[in-house]
Image 1 (cartoon, rainbow, N blue to C red):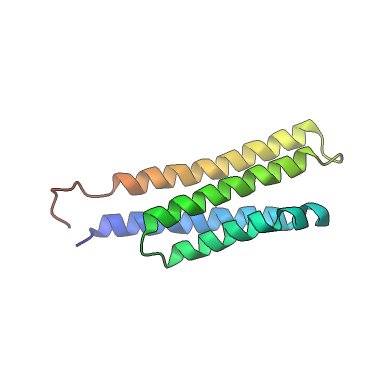
Image 2: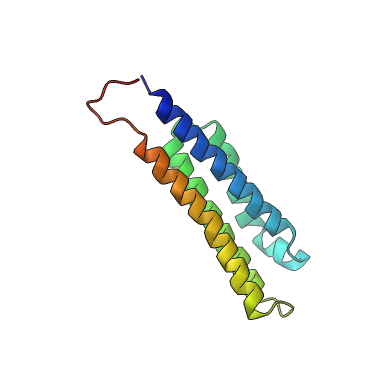
Length: 125
């Protein structure tokens, strides 16, 4: 039987992954039309993997996939911003830092959830 602490920690990490992906998706949606069209497959994959995480039986695998897809979307958004002549280097740097903070939140949540997993010989509870 899985401990309540593990279930809550895993669910919290999953919920955070979905929230961060939603934020990244909103940033993608605010891009100029050409960039949006070019990055649509990346954005849709990130969105789908985050939504699939909610009902996944193997949350660890689904969570890793959702986080990787979110990181790919974040990098694609940064690349699009770097190529935008209307944005200066400072704005691109700020975006890079903002997205790095978002992705760090995901990493921190993943570490906390994995630390709450019971030891193999520990009885649940």
